[in-house]
Image 1 (tube, rainbow, N blue to C red):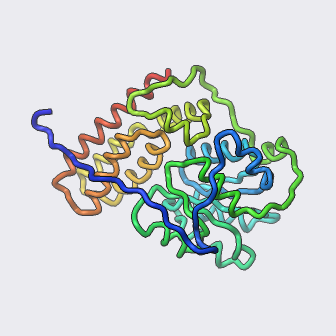
Image 2: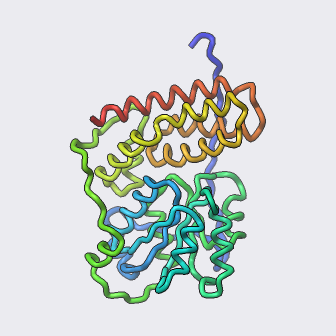
Image 3: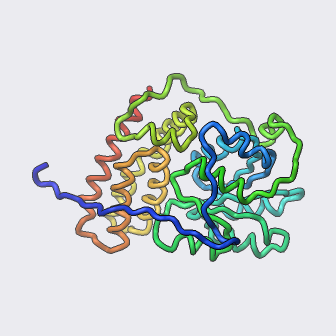
Length: 305
């Protein structure tokens, strides 16, 4: 397009790190449709899920509760510590986001490890950061393993099977779901289309184990809550409040990843990199790219009815 700068995003590399026993390492991944037997030994296990973004909590809680795990949710580290210190608390694993208000994941892990009774409680980090050294930073804070966003449910199931010690609990799945709160049916009508502008539906469903109803709820929740966030980001960029813009971009990247909005994620990453590098000259062009990518996603969301 005439008069528009060409933005290059570079090349993405992926790699795996292997650690000795006692550190995070590669874990088996259950095949689609076969995780019922794979997780049978840990059904009834109690999970403390720490995540400040309510729609993301709903995604993880719904996927785990369906598989017979009992999930308690906390919105930040302080709420997590309250849950852990409550009478009768008996958790088998903690799954925590890293970027949260009040108390982030690193502080939460250190606080948990300072409690004698929780020195060996498995803690799994969830983060949208893909920067070098992030895994090591999580482990140094006292965590046992690391899961990058967007969520891959089979990878998460593999980590839970690796770290949860089976207790032989005999509660029925019905009792477990009642304790955790049974997943709510969508109050909206309609079905998920096979294609939507700006959203890679097959990739998203692959991560969500094919749950079309759940993905539609995620999309509707994003449309209701977060479609205006780009306006906030651009406002903060223009006013020089880069710290706030970076925080909002981080939040948006995690959600956009769950939506498999690949173009939107790519632009967010480029803008985050420009903020880190202090490359203010490219802010206007990248902000325009961000608005266009979000407009494409919004077009897809509007097709949901």
